[in-house]
Length: 440
Image (tube, rainbow, N blue to C red; front, side):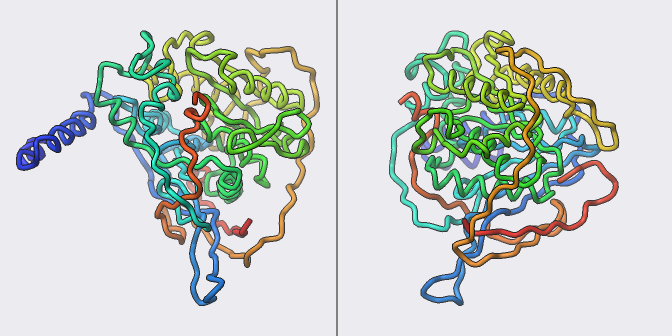
C-alpha cells in the first residue's frame, strides 16, 4: 500500500485521487474468518463453434463460446452453484463496498462455484457476427434501475447500498460489461449454456443464481438442455421472462420471450424455481406481477416455483436490484441457505437424497398434477459444419478456444430498459466428457 502511494505521488493529482479511491475500495476489513480451502480453480470455454471464412476455407474463426470460471472447495457439496450475471462477474465477487460477496460466502459453505460469462459478453469469445458499439451515458439512469432510489442521487432512506460511500457508487458504475438484449443473443447464450449443463463439467446437480436479464436465460437453458441436471434456479429481480405461446403474451425484443407451450412445460422438471424481489417493488413494476404469473404457469404444469419479496417476507428492508451485493448480504445468503436445504440441495456426495419436501409459502392453492414427461428437444439442422469439441474435467487440461470478449447489438442495462463438475468432492475423477458443438 505504501509503495502504491509513493508511486502515485508522481502522477497528476486527479489520477492520484482515482488510484487512492480504488485502493481504499479494495482494502478489506480485518476478518477473523477461516481461510477458504480450495481443491482446484480454473476456467474453460464451451458451447461455441468454429466458422470457416466463406472467402477462404483455410481460415476459420472460433466464435460464440461462453467462458466458465470455477472454484472447487475441499470436501465439496454435491450441488454446484452457477452464477450468471447481467452486468459483470464483479457482482458475485464482492459487496457494493468491496466486502465479501456470494462467491466466497458459498465457497465457505462448501459449494462448488462457477461464474459464467455467456457468449459475446465479458471474457467470452468472439461473436460469429458483426456488432456495433454505441455510446450511451447511462450511469445515472442505472441508479433507479438498480433499485437504489427513485431518481439519482436520492437514495431510499433504508437502502442497503452504502450510500455514504462515494467510492462504492463509482465502483458500481465502472465495473460493467456491455449488455446485449436481443432475441439472437438469447438464443446464442442459451445454446452455449445448455451445452455446459449437459457436458457433465458442472456435475449433475446444478443451481443457477441469476440477476436481472439472466433469469429468463437460465430458465430457457434448462429447457434446451437434454438432461435434467438443472435442479434449481433462483432469479434475483428478473427483468424479462419466458412465456408459453398459449399465455396471451406478445413477445418482442430481448425481455419478453415466447416459446412453444410444450417446451415451456419442461420447467416442471426443475426441482425448485424461486423468484426473489428486493424492497420497494410492487405491481406497478412490470416484471414483478409477471413473475408471479410465470410462477403460476409453472406450478399449473406440475412444477415447483415460488415467489418472495425480501422486504415483506423476510424483513430485509431496503434490498436493492442485486441483494446479494447489499450490506446485509449475509442475511440474503441465509435465505438462499434455507431454499437449498428445504429442497434437499445442500448434501454431500454419497449421502442419500432427501424426498422432495412439501412446498412452503405457496402464493395460491395449486392443483396436484403429474409432472409432464420430458420431451426431447427438437434439433435444428446446423447452418455451418458441425464441430466436435472435447472438454476435460475443470482443473485438468484447458478446453480449446479463445477467451476474448466480443459482442452483438447493444441495447443497454436490462433493469434500465424497464425504468426507462462436476460432482466435486468424490475421490474418483469423472471420465473425460465429449460433446457436439453445433452452429445454430
